[in-house]
Image (cartoon, rainbow, N blue to C red; front, side, top):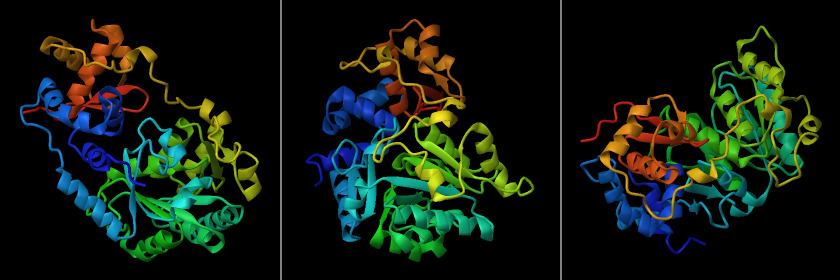
Length: 380
């Protein structure tokens, strides 16, 4: 069932300047989406924005919900029973997802399979075989609907069970276009997730956000053929940071498409050739693991310090305090704990000021209790 405040939640999630982390902080501070919406203009003004942030009307939110429902889909809201529990554990979990598919499948354990778009025939065959075996063992296979490994994984899973796709654009904008029929099959026999509203054409900046959904939905992530600089390695890193298991299929050192997956193996990812290599290294079904050896080789997302949590009551911060914070920030993310060491504001005041600056469009809050200045963020 839709929550009673679905319109307010959707409006808040779609409001200008409200990212996934800011959404959670606003709800925690103001208690509900309606109160947070009412506070947005004042927060933006305090952060230095002269023009109020764009907030969708209740009618616009209702039209979005009705349009998704007309396609046979529904919206999934964070902190409701229908929302995928493993995904909800991410610090930057999407506040709302549009979903087409079988809602009952969300309770099933899932494994992600990702890899190169320009995959070899052998890589596609391996991905399809692993996906088919996983689906036959009762797992939902998650991937990103891309060409190559992703499409092969979806196809293999559908032969023996089911599969989920997380896409970068709106539900009505299949990408790549040649996979539109595959997306329709997944919506009918599995599920398709979209963080973006209907009508959103996928852009490059949307794909890392999609990758975190793939990683967040699954107990583990299997990489089949990936270059050293690829979205698949981003997905693997996000999975490790979330405490999920990471698996990699070994490949030829002479094939550039395998250098990334081989690199994961050197970092401690589970060497994967068969279904048993995956099942033997998974946590108990339905529970997220600790990432085991692989997670220890990376810099995990550090939990936010308890002292840095937003205060229930907004803390007054003057212009000098905000200017002092901005002077310490740049495009490269820094930990909030570092800011606390170099400024003379209390933790609660820093968090209040950062929230105002984010709503004003001047800074971005990132997982791991980090923050960065938005390039070209002069506010008029």
